[in-house]
Length: 370
Image 1 (cartoon, one colour):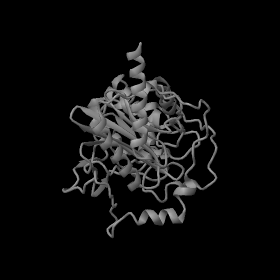
Image 2 (cartoon, helix red, strand yellow):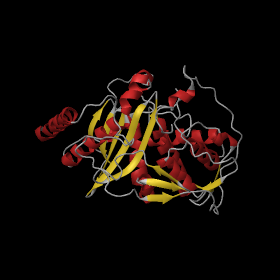
Image 3 (cartoon, rainbow, N blue to C red):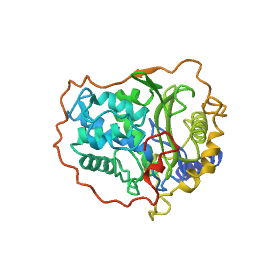
Image 4 (cartoon, rainbow, N blue to C red):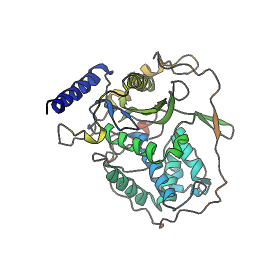
């Protein structure tokens, strides 16, 4: 009995140490060991937040599940509809009627975070946007994402599109453990789309030792979000950082979390599944627009770039890329696989509250989709 209580006390002490020693963040964060599901650091992980383009991780997951279930293949067609074309930036701008493979579409939403392509995936895989979003929410429920609700496939601002750091960590772990064959979609350094080079918004890829994914997200209401994964030796860690004030801040926080996490791998830590909210009440997600999208905030972020517009990251754990980014070519065509077997439905709009500000302002200053 004494040994059992001693272990519980030791576990509690180690958790306290992790909360004290890891860097503070403006918004929620969590660091997990993907293989074991152990939580190495956390803060406010049950606080609802707008995920922005982290939403596209679920878009990818639903697509992977559809392929696994035999509904379609990676070379199946994704059609650009007029509805997809009309999505706000970030976008590829392919004309309505264009066709690309699911493979290329997934690469584009992970790197370019293109909202038009995310909508095209939803319509082509799910039969309609509405049907696809229903599948997103079904998968979230199945994974135990108890404080998550999706309203779209791209992450553009909606008060009905929210999640938590804890729930996003569950999704990240599911992707990495259930579909290791698709890990390459999340570590692409850049895309070659015709004569255009599209860099990955995840600044750690190619610049942090072991970085191998996963996704960025930004709208005014969310602040700057990042899921960053890295593998060293036999361990893959994932950091979820929500509500940073800039691209630089989220990269530096994630790098610090990952670095300290690799130093503490193997220590006693609680499992992700075992954590429960101390406050069972569910609250409205934080809206960071007053902190993120003022003229002053935008000007401050410009100070984090050099004369050539490159981000200045001061973290001792992030290094300049000493070579040209490895680019993956994407484009239209090549979709010679079977179309999705999902029934085709007309989209019936579901009324959701509109933000009090013009939607275009939500992404005008960030250069990221959703």
